[in-house]
Length: 289
Image (cartoon, rainbow, N blue to C red):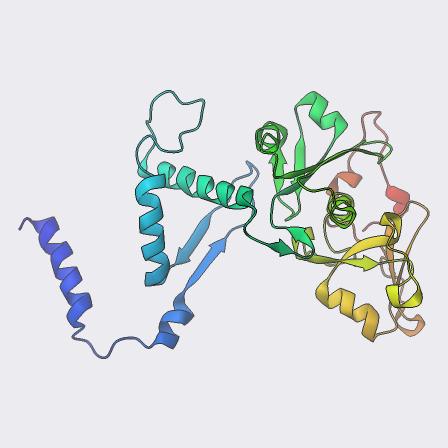
């Protein structure tokens, strides 16, 4: 054997005979496993890291043998395959995830089919510039959104930037409950309790004006997004919610806890603090932090 082959063979044998003690317990192996997706960077990308158990590794090897092979899942704009092995792995996994979502076999989550939900404005689509927002809180450049929207199984919600009027809702199934949830993702983007950063995919629909048990109506203007702990808090404490004159959800503490804190969550809508096309700042009534 050459040096590299000898090193590889020795490493495999050491794993097999394990001279340094008993095999790690199943509990220890389970404790070490993780996959972590980092924060989205300014260019839209993310770093990913992890430690896979042997079963996960076996699945990944089998999938990548086909999906990451030279020439497989090439971006349409590339004429010949000059990608590195890492780039082929990236494109192969992306293709597998896309087909998995489009298959419709992932079931539902919080009342919606598991799929990509993205919202944008008419103005950004016309300019082919700016960013759209996914139900997970990620930003997506408009050219990438247009490519993604070509797949009919995803959900695209378009509204007017200035009036907030709903203009278009493309979806796979005509279900009123589904449409309402998509509008909630687009309008609220995440939990509406001030200080909460949970994105829309992990939130539930909450009756903001009057709770269902108090004869509340399931109209879209009466609903809002709330993460599970905050939704339960409304049922178990004296906190209440309501809508203000601009249809934003307010979280109202009990009188003895009311210290003048913010009642509206602006975390998921940083664009409210920018200038609009006319150069006027959208202060949103002064309620957002």
